[in-house]
Image (cartoon, rainbow, N blue to C red; front, side):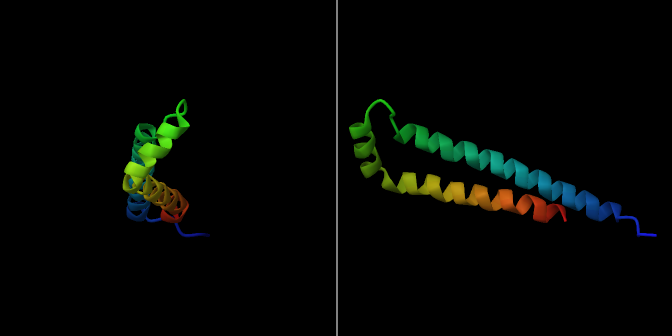
Length: 80
């Protein structure tokens, strides 16, 4: 007969997964909000100028996307 799971470890895993889920949602929203301020779909040349002036901010949005991806990949691992 398999052993019953420890309720404390289940609680910790659920809390970790919940925090990672919140991090993924917040970081995805933040990265999208940053890009929305920099990219104008109606004006490609204006977008290039804005990206040139704010390259660091655009790079930050990409770094946030990578952090979001890492947190999403951590969700199933945290549940184990």
